Image 1: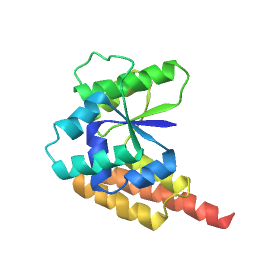
Image 2: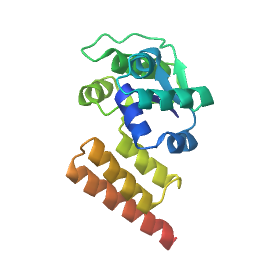
Image 3: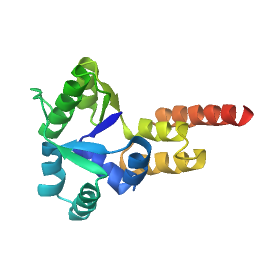
Image 4: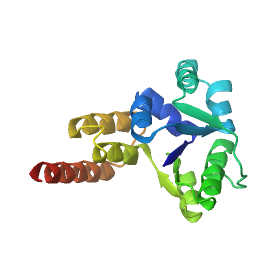
Length: 171
């Protein structure tokens, strides 16, 4: 599965120190040239831009030129991310758009694309045994502090993780 990040999700992942975990769990992370421009070249947060550039240099993140164009009311980074995900899906590849942007999520769903937020990636990391239940709790609360999540969603995800973890222990 190839994860395609928009700028917001990439920056949030970096702030939460999740990029190494996400790379370890899902392999190389992908950004489009517009996302690279938003984060690295035009970045308002030089410390985030520098860290992300280090991850690109290390090969954890790959900057790709999108093979499609999505005309929409989305920002250029979100539009390119969805367009690249759509192109990959049409080519039979397993690609997922990672975004926290509600408009981008709605557009991805309309296009029948797989779309996840960071909260869902954290759940998958637990399911793949790359993160413990306690680490999940810490990370989901840290994500909530930076990027307000719906409190009901947090509760539902924590409950789901508890059920799965307990079921695995019982087996």
